[in-house]
Amino acid sequence: MECKNCSHDFLGTYCNHCGQKITDRITLKHLGNQIIEDIFDLDQGLLYTVKQLWINPGTTALDFIAGRRKRYYGPIKYLLLWTAVYFILSPLIVGDRKTPSMIDLVFNSHAPFSSQSSDDLFTFYLEVIVRHTDLYYLGMIPFFTFLSYVLFKKRGFFLAELSIPYLYLAGQIVFVLVMTLPFMALFGDKVVFALLPITFVFIIYFVVVMHKQFFQESWVKTVLKSLTVIYVGQIISGVIAYGIFNVIKFLPWFP
Image (tube, rainbow, N blue to C red):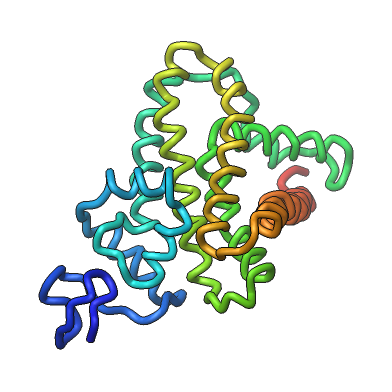
């Protein structure tokens, strides 16, 4: 075998030069195994991965898919790490905001598909974006991945392989949120709402650059397809959320 990470020739399952395990193309089974490995196995490469995701997000994802993984933090582990840091530090730094109960927004007596129900969903969505931005973009990964599979189908990537750059995207968003926690501590809620448009601009930049490096198409096609992935993905997720949200209200929670 030739190691895809260091190009060393060897026999067996692990490279005797750099230690990387030989794997085939990324499948759903591989992602499941990767989750287990990422949770219970830590390795080097965190700072290098942070730096590369700023300047070469698409190349980083391509390297990981191609098997050159030893130098990088795995995408699932990268996302879990920064999510855990944000989850621990955020309540300590930001403090409590006077906000409506998200449970009460879902489980109440408002009629399904009514204007009141729509207001509940809008408030719920806003609270998720403000209070749980990490979870919001984590939920966007399946939609971004599916749209990329449709738009870039000729590139020949598996659906699971296309999830890699978006896992890194979600991890990088949470990393940015962690870096903004000190500003939230100094300036309070005002900085939270001020950072939302900045975060969205960063996401557009990240996705466009990632798609350009990853799929190697012209800038015009890259920008158009990137905006399609971002906006259509959120529209589809919103429609699905609207349906689920109102179906819940059909259930007999209240007499």
